[in-house]
Length: 196
Image 1 (cartoon, rainbow, N blue to C red):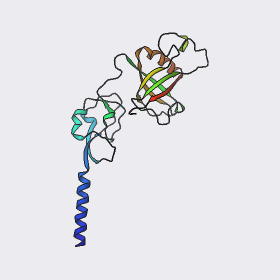
Image 2 (tube, rainbow, N blue to C red):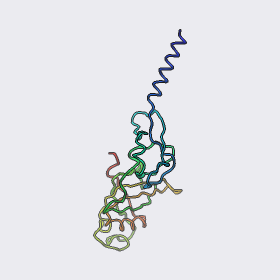
Image 3 (cartoon, rainbow, N blue to C red):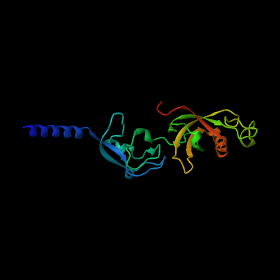
Image 4 (tube, rainbow, N blue to C red):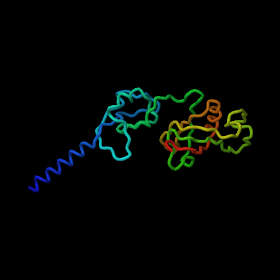
C-alpha cells in the first residue's frame, strides 16, 4: 500500500512539474546587434521559468521574426522583449558614435542599452578653450558643455579590457564627440539606468 501511495505522489509531482513548463522563444544562433531576426535565428524550447524570468512565449515566435536585435544575441539563450526592437537606430536627428572605454572608465555594473549618459570632454593636457583639435562650434561637445546620450549597445571587453560603447547623440554633436573619442578624451556619467 505504501508503495502505491509513493507511486501516486511521484506521478502527481511529475505532472505538476510538467505543467509548470512553458514554451518560450530561444536564440538558435548568434545574432549581431542591429541585425534583423530570421526564422533560422530562432527556435522554441519548453522550460520551467523561475520567478521574475520574462521570456517571449513560444506562440509569439512569428511576431519576433523581422524585428532587430537590440543587443548581441547568443545561441542557446532565451529571448526577452528587451532584446528585440522594431525601431532602427539612429532615428531622425540622431547619430551613432562608437566610444572605446578602459575598464577604469566604466561603471561597476557596466552599461546597458537604453541607459542615459552625459558625455564629458576630459582634459588632454592642452588648452581646451576652443574645443577638440582647436575647433570651435555651437555643439555641446565643442563649447565645453556636456552632451546627452543614450547607450545603444556595449560590446564585450577586448584583449586589453577596453569596451566599445555605441552612443546615440544629437546629430549636431556627433562629429565633436567622435573627435573626443578618437583622442581618448571622453568620460561617461550614467544619469539613468535602463529600466530604472
